[in-house]
Length: 144
Length: 490
Image 1 (cartoon, rainbow over the protein chains, first blue to last red):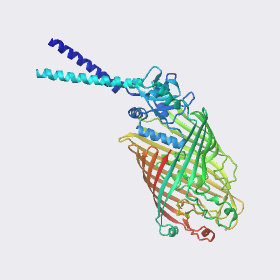
Image 2: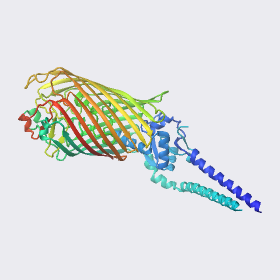
Image 3: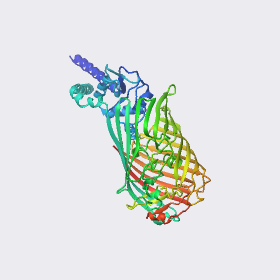
C-alpha cells in the first residue's frame, strides 16, 4: 500500500514536471513574437520587414499599399520592436509621429492579436505581429 | 520519516504549481475563445477594413525667446539691449485625401500668428512702388522664432500654402507629384515640423539657400521620386528629380519676372543596419535655377520692434528703390551624412550628422541704376560655403541633449554689405524632452559670431527709414539667445 502511494506520488510529480517544462519552453523559446502576413503573400526579408515597420516601404512589391497593424499588448510590441526593428517601442512610436508630421502619414493602429490575425487572414494588404503560439492555418510568418 | 514527509510536501507543491500553470493557460485560451466575433466585426474591423479617405493632422508650437547683443558698439543696442518675447511660431494644418487606390491629394497650410498682425515698417516711404506693396517684408530664416520659414511670406499673421499636390503612389519605386511641393535637398528640408526637428533653430544650411541662393523652399512643377532596394547589398536607394516653373512662392509679391525652368535632384543611400545597431545614410543634392527680380538699392538686415513689442532676429530686407533689375542664376551642390548608433544602454541612440553646401550665384545687371549711384556693382559672382556638424544623444526614448556647430562663409568682391556678415560661426546646445510622442519641450542656447556683418538696424518708427535714421555699421556682432519651445503634433 505504502509503495503504491509512493508510486502514485512520483508519477504525479513527473507529470507536473512535464506540464511545467512544456509551459516554460513555450513561453521561452517557442512562443516568441513573429511578424505575420496572409498565406497568399510571398515571404519578405528581415530588411524589408524593418523598412515596412519604420515607414520606408509603403507598398507591397507587386503593388498595393501595405497596411500595418501594431499589437496593443505592450510586452508583445516591445519584444517585436527589439528583435525585428532594433529599437524600443517608444522609438518606433516616435518614428511614426515623425512620419505623420513629415508627410501626413497616418500612424498604424494598435489592436489585439485576435484582430490582427483576423485582418491578416482576410486581406493580403495587412501585416502585423503576434505570438507564435497564436498562429493558425490562414496566416504565416512573414520572414519564413 | 521526516525526509519522506518533506519530499511529499515538495512534490505536492510541485503538483499545485503545475495545476496553476495549466489553469492559467486554459483561462487564457478561454478568454480568447470567449471574444464575441460579432462584436469584433462591428466594433473594430469595419474601421480597419475601410481605408481612411480623409485625414486631418498638423502641429503647433509656442515659443519664448530671450536675445542679447554682446557688442556695446552695435547701434541696435541703443534700442534693443535685451529682448524677450513669446510667439506662436507655427500652426500648420495637413489635409490628406485618398482619392482612389494609389492616388492622393495632400496639402499643408501654415497660419502665421501675431496678435493684431504687424505693421509694415516702410509703408510711409515715399516710393509708391514700395508703399503699394507693403507685403514686401521679406523675413528670412536665419531665425529662431519662425521655424525654418524660408517661404517669403507677406507678413506675420498671414496664411501660406507650404504644399499642395496630387500624388500617384501606387509603387514605392516610382511616384509622381504634380503641384506645389517642398524642394528635396539634404536632411532637413523635408522635416520642417517643429515636433520632429531636434533643435529649435534649424541649421542655416537648411534655411539659408532660399534667401541666399534663390532656391525656393517649395516649388511648383513636377516631381518624380521613389525608393529602390539595391539587391545584393540590401541598400535602399532614394531619389527625387524635379522640374519647376522657377518661381519661388514669393514670385507675386517680389515681382519675380522669371518664367524659366528650374531643376534639381536628390539622392540618398540607406545602408542596411550593421550588426542591427548602426544605420548609415549618405547622399547629395543639386539645384539649378534662374530668376529675374527687381533689386532694391539698399537692402540691409534689421531688427523690427513692432507695436506689440515683438522683435525678430530675422534680417529684414528693406526695399528702398525699385529701379534696377537683376537676372540671377543659382547653382547649388550639397552632400549629407548621417550615422545612428542604436540599441545602446539605457535605450540610447547616438546620432552624428553633417552637411556641406556650396553655391555659385551669378548676377547680371539689367536696366539702369537710378538714385544712389556706385553703391552696387553688377554683374557679380558670389560663392557660398555652408557646413555643420551635429551630435545628438537620445536616451530613454525621450531625452535628447544635442550640440551643433555651423560655419557659413560668403565670398564676393562686391562691397555690398552681406546680410549675416562675410562669415559666421554658430554654436547651439540644447535639450529636447519628448514628454509623449506627440508633445516636445525644447530648451536651447545659441551663440552667433558674425564677422564683418552689415549693420543691425533698430527701427522703432517706420519714418526712420524715410528720414535716414539708419545706422550703416559694419562690425562683428555676437548674439546670445536663450529659447524654449513647446511643440504639439495632432
